[in-house]
Length: 415
Ligand code: GLV
Ligand code: MN
Ligand code: MN
Ligand code: MN
Image (cartoon, rainbow, N blue to C red):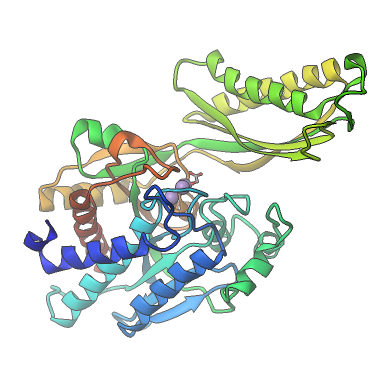
């Protein structure tokens, strides 16, 4: 099927599908959580791709990996990228598509520049990044590497974040050989392409989305403290069951969405740890993380306040102590109009069409948008599913996206 495609498209698809083999799971997904051996393998692939083309590779103090192309002297970089890490049992497109597309776009631009195809020499240099720990499944908060780069998170603090087994970011990065010391590149602008993870583009038959805004998101880090006791010998009236309290918290986190018009607010609890986790012990402690997202920050704030007041009721009803703290709060933001217009010009030039779209999911561009002119592109996701093995985007949509990103980057480096 790929034989009729141009060589560039075939080369991209070959690389994309080869990277999908790293950390492959039984049902066509990947499991490449941050700073694991599988993450190391994708990093080695990235390094080989860049070094075999003579590009400089750097790794900074939070494990962000950069490939730098020298197109002109003494100029900052147009940075393309996304992340190669995944959720546990994640999809093979989320993040990886954007990094591999970035590398291929850079390669095409390097070839065009070397053949003198440009109207004038590039104004900027070009770089590609594989951001550390966008997913936040193993080490929370998510979007960690790009947020440190953007100065929103503190590098020293993030290096000490621990996973559920007590391993720190620093130790995990050291163990895979990716705790770097290299200088970060100065950047002029940032562009990222990603799968939509929703179904708007698919439904409307539009190949490219231009992200014009990101939702307001926040997590609530919740610790439910009860009293450990025997599940048989303890009278029902004497129990202070942390797991029962946690179950009620989870239900309230879900029900709070009913206070708003449908799909105005989305919420979930996706992680829970239980101590001591025995069938014959009433739980003493449960840790859980709630995730709240809406277009409007006031909606998120009022949902959060309602959950906190529900928590006080649950505490009183079951004789528990429940600690809750705000965590990973990201204000909703607009993406720059100049980048949206650039995307629309490219859509006209390539004849693809594009539509403006919001992102409800988090991305590295959400951090980068705080410090640099940022462009964020989406390609369609089949059935809109993501963060699961069934995640899928079609080869032809991926190929269109790489061409599109190349054109955007071409214009940015000549900006
Ligand atoms: C992480 O993948 C997020 O969407 O926040
Ligand atoms: Mn992603
Ligand atoms: Mn993701
Ligand atoms: Mn994400």
